[in-house]
Image (cartoon, rainbow, N blue to C red; front, side, top):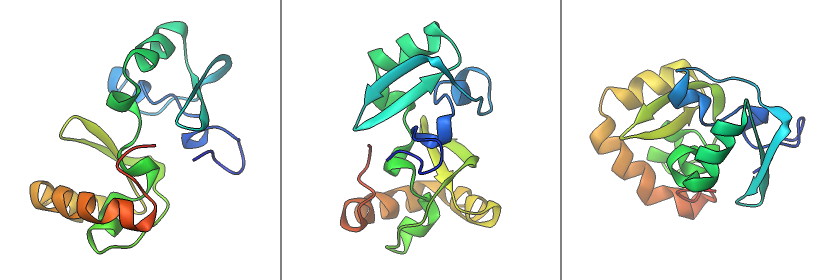
Length: 126
């Protein structure tokens, strides 16, 4: 889902940068790609090409909803600044406490979040 302020997915951050650089970087309108009903922007052409080849590998799990809230069956907005790569996928969280709690038992909580995601409109992917 596009960010209401920027109009871009994940607030205009490059999803590939989380994996390549280890932190979120703002994308450039010069490198724009449409996928999953949203516009995604990237730092460079290489990141855009990597995303285009396999968007599900880089897009945040649960459409960017907060992973921990989903374990209890609730949808919350995840922050592109509070995240973790869990089981090879990017997961956003609403708070740093939620991130900590999720990571303390990620194997079990990942399954619980998956079970609730579609029911609350945070499908497994965008």
